[in-house]
Length: 252
Image 1 (cartoon, rainbow, N blue to C red):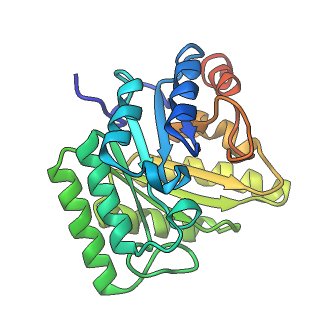
Image 2: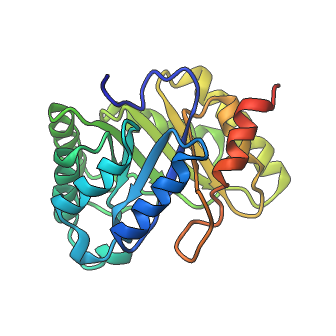
Image 3: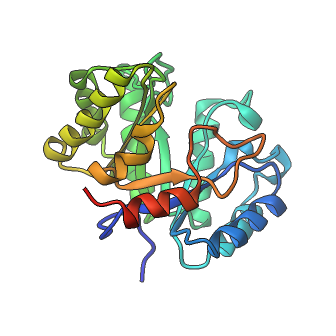
């Protein structure tokens, strides 16, 4: 059976791997397998540059057994200094190595403060990259990290534009600094479920953490969680053990 993030019967518990070495990544995979992980997210930019090779990618992905793998190749961290063209080539290499879902930044080829470029040439290159990834059998997620609160109209606008560019899964990250903003983000999650017509992942950072935990109960297609917190992990990402409880035992 083909590995996939699409058309799942319930949101996938996706364990994010931010590791400098394949040894640490593989150890974390083995531990998370025993705690109910259902998918993995390999943030390649966290790996030291010497490990950015097809052989290493295949070695890490092999440890994931039959679970699907989501990969990012973001700017920064150990990708500092790389051009966007090099990042795109890295995504193609990851797809060739067996990655299931490739993250195409919404401002790839032309940086934008809300990570959704409006440059026609960059958009065309994004769509060509997405077509190529699809042709290789990979699924595509497009991400826009705003890292600030955004009203429903703007979130829906970004989501629809990502969908138009060919993304299979929409990912938008905003923020919530007040309870009012957090409650509104929960409402926006329900709005996306009703109006978007595509799988999505809507997250928020900031002071309020409820949205990240309850989003999968309102329509988000997966939970980005961690096996454990360390110096490299994203503090806002909840533990796998917590999210398994939220998904499987909280009814509303």
